[in-house]
Image (cartoon, rainbow, N blue to C red; front, side, top):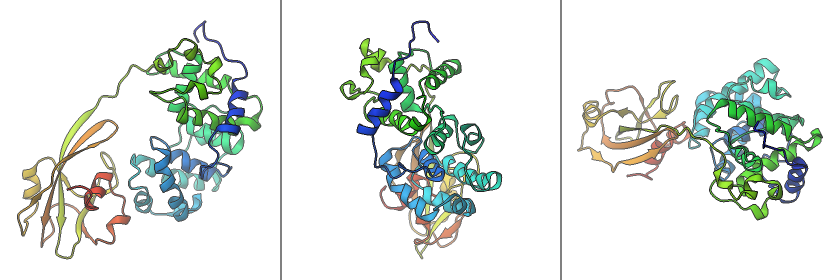
Length: 346
């Protein structure tokens, strides 16, 4: 820790008081100590907007009201309900985690972050959030929003692309925890709320911040300089030709993607590296319809999709099956494929 770095006084108490008066109070996963509901919301909220999760969360609970129901469901059902949320490894890990909670812990989530982090898909920050909200454990969270809040308050200028720098911030986050375990739920929520509503990436509202007068970045008038992270994601791009095969009954030809790679484990229209390979895999009864291509943006890659719609009397010469029009909406489909089949593209 740099010699010039000092911890603000009464930081945790300021945050707790602010959350109780000004923080978010009415989100459907708040005001509960049910680890299943908290865990589900934490996984859904990873890299996903609250407004989007508000649509999915109640539907998921209705279909899988507890960890036993989720663990006992087929993975395809879980992926189908997750369809559109993206980052599908979250859904696969969610399913595996539920099964491990049943098998290893008798259907009860363990009460400590140390045990929770051993479960699939639960990282250190998520484990701490569940433990803090549900079991009042004094465990520090450090997601993207919290990193931004703390690095600004502390003027922590170490490069978070380096693991040693991130470990240093974890240590500071632990030192800032409230001494009273009963304050852990509102304190943890306050960090999330401040980062989501006030201490924003490209805009700061310091006049609304409960710790602005102890924020070192504000005092130096450099809040947007934090957090420091020099390593940039290397982006790649790929061009995919998408076979949208339909028969006279209105069925669509879908296949299940491999367990690894893009759209792993989801149902999808078949994709080909080039147009010639796609056309060689089928014998259309009418001229193919070439749909305007578009770009679909993933975290690390841009996909340039080139759909070709064909009417067939025989199955295409690639793995898959005919799926009825009333059945495919319930399957786990990649977002761009769902948009295409819904008629929102083309």
